[in-house]
Length: 391
Image (tube, rainbow, N blue to C red):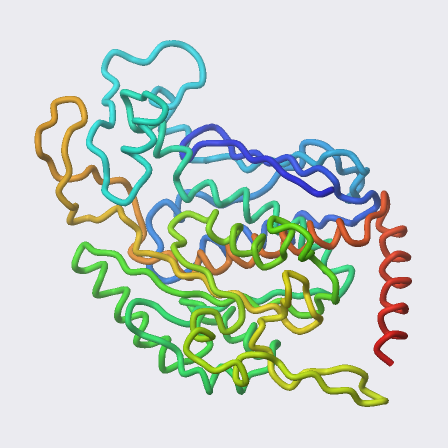
């Protein structure tokens, strides 16, 4: 069983993750994890915080000579900005007398519901943990997981399909191979593989920033090489699509998720939704379409897994919305924290790594193994059995 736990605050000393259940002898490349953290910090429309932090992980336990030991892996990412918050975010001692408490909630954030739920008189306690800064550890965990997936030739790519009202041309995207799509997304400042749409998206982001506003977007994740059989229809919470959708919704500001055709499937007849099955003696069983997005009945079916997630505009606005002071009940404009004009390109990277973790979790469930060598043997045996049945 693969599982993880994260801890940390936006301006605290460090962000920490513990991962349990990784097989022994899995090679972990520190630079590969740091690369994913770097990708998370990129993208047109990102804010000043990205200039302060240069995220790098430090392994604390569970890794020896760049290989897992079968014990829990602990890692940390230290916040450089913490030195500027030593008195305001001190883990010990009493609060300073001149501490300015956050009492004016920002609409769309966890400020108010968090303060009411946990009985805080300072909403900084809510916003520090609810902050998207904490997606750093989600990416780090996913970056570890994808090194397990790499062993079994499972690859992921995330790209932007919409920012604000601007959408990509679906025909242009469909004409690209997985490798071309990935390369174009990586070279784009908004992770968009359609150059015409990319230019329009950049203008939308720039206009939002000029207006003191923010803008959201939609990203798509594609996973290739996923074998048949991950997930289960036996219980609702074991369905692979449910787990992927839930993981996407666990990312800050994500408000909607689709698998395959998603909401479009509700507008089409069944004959245009479901993927017909064909058999060829040489090719075996195959499909000509992938409306299911690689998942049928909660189980991966061997086709590429396709996920889309919609991110709302970031709710911290430089022209803030009306709010009130929870202490005095006076009307105020909402508080302003450092923020981005658009974080959808970064959210795509986060989603990509979160999806990698879910797939790795389901992979470990299916193929088990205390070591990576044992897992390889289990995979080979299973794939031979499946190939025989479909021949």
